Amino acid sequence: MKIAITGATGNMGQETLKEVLKIKEIEHINLLVLEDDKRGNKLLKDHKKDKQRLTIIRGNLANRDACEKLISDCDYVINLAACIPPHSDQNPQKAIECNEVGVDTIVSVIEGMKKQPKFIDISTMALYGNRNHLHPWGRVGDPLLVSPYDIYSATKLRGEFRVLESEISCWVILRQTAMLHINMLKDNMSDGLMFHTCFNAPLEWATAHDSGVLIANILKADINKKLKKDFWHKCYNIGCHKNRITGFDTLNDGFKIIGGSAKDFFRPNYDATRNFHGMWFYDSHVLDNLFHYQSQDTAEYWNLIGKKYWYYKLGKIVPKKLIKKFAIDRLLKNYNCPYYWHKHNDEGKMQAYFGGKDKFEAISKKWKDFDLLVENRAPEGEQIDYNALRDIKNAKLIDYGYDIDKPDSKITIEDLKNVAKMHGGKLISKTYNGNMQEKLLWQNQDGEKFTAKAYTVIKAGHWLNRTYKENVWDFDRLSKKDKIYAQIWYDSHTKDENYIYSFDENFNSKIERFE
Image 1 (tube, one colour):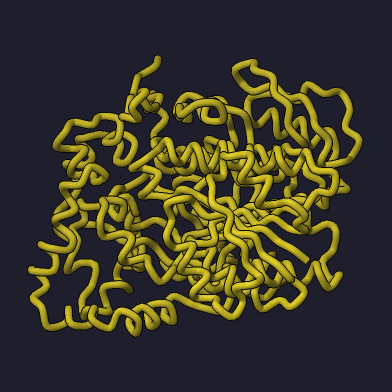
Image 2 (cartoon, one colour):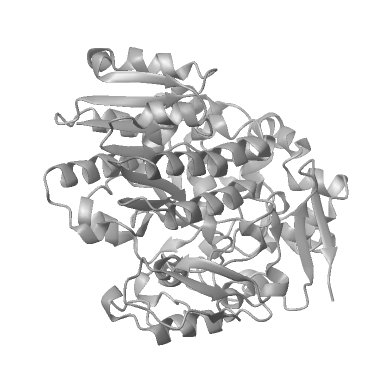
């Protein structure tokens, strides 16, 4: 048996390779590695005893020749490659090349093969966009409201749609949640990305290790004929029920390594108050029930970080004000930080991430005046029970226009019509044969017709808007008529916001008002 892996030098990729090498039935693994990525050679050194089972193919995911070499004679293709933040923010063109054009290329190659390999595509929970305490719980099928200016999410959205609508005979999409990996602290200390994380954002973490185990367990189950056919042609959320916290909790846990807390090193007005991405998965159990991969909690992760980077503990003897100045505050001048946007009058990002410059300026600099969910206070001072909020039994889910828990075989054409109507559009197709992979004709609220499978729309949460074709975020306008979008969008936006967010040709933020 032969498999191909893209993105094997990444954090999830390294863990996946480590786990799949344990599967004796896999005789050979092709790895796609960028020409200038020295980590490819390190992979061979790290897996010296399995070197004969590995072949590195140098090239870009968007290069058809490289993709053809990669997947030739393979039984499975695992696409882990992605240009993620902050790299996607630093080089948006690379994000387009990898996350969008690259996915289209590899899908096209597979579609053209006589004997198609099974395709496992790693997508992202970032597609769901911003969540807060009003709807912290979500699941596959929720609307995909990618956050304005998040080029990573926009390109992954378009890439995922390509897979869903492909002619690949056997595919599955796994939406990865926020991922804890061994290099996380190091990777986030050279950019202002950490300031995008809302303190009250609901986050469900999974570790890179557990994610690698998941991929290996999927392969083992299928190789051993224990995987049901209805596993394929679906989207799933990769999460971990043990790790449902908030952005503030995450920072706080990290700073405990050096004997401090988030309040010692951050001020309330350092981070965005909206326009992030993250939620707690109501359906985390689905993949875990099948593949039993969820094992590591956040406490175990931080313990591992403390052991690997033992020198972090020296921070306990360094004055906290000094650490704050040289480790955190220096990043406030970074182009990717709210302070920078404010100083340079970036109206688009001020509006997207805070609701306007005035809202940013009104945020208190003192923690005693800032509402934290973990302290049982929601924004505007509302009292809330944080533990009750995190209890899945109290999850508040949205109305999709039909019963999303219905088995696929029970879905009717009326269900499809109702979903389209909720979106402010309609189903143009007059018949539906009961096959969720059937391509149908739809119309959105702007009268634009598009083709998409029944599953893509009513089970995977996709609905055509401008973000599927260009880097434009038009949800203020769309939500006024789209009842599915509105349920989530108005949790963090007001109905009198009338903005269209976009990029110019140089990927600078643009914003325009509409009436």
